[in-house]
Length: 128
Ligand code: 9YT
Image 1 (cartoon, protein in one colour):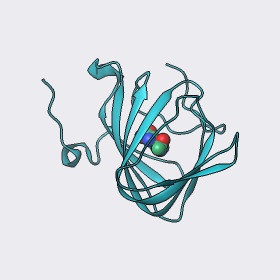
Image 2 (spheres, rainbow, N blue to C red):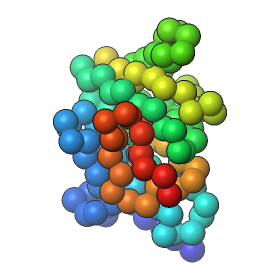
Image 3 (cartoon, rainbow, N blue to C red):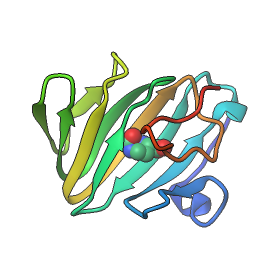
């Protein structure tokens, strides 16, 4: 069985920062852990906007703390995000993620990310 804590992941290679420091992702489970998905705690910092388009992954996101919104670009809809809200990018939806208060999010990726992924120019992570 695997048991891990956020505290022991901080400042290791499982802690990944966005190039522009808009978010930090602590990757509790990665592809190499063999679960078939990866599981991250991500903090999106207040006042930031991130363009995301996971063309090669599905992601489910559950908010445990904070306040923000997701704008889906195909339809221009804005979805409020707060504690207890889940959103799932089941259509590889291109979107903008904005935080008005620091958002603490639990994120699951299928297929699992391998470790060092940060968003490329187009908002995606590379394929497996
Ligand atoms: C919600 C979201 O996708 N934020 C960007 C970082 C990502 N969750 C990750 O790599 O942990």
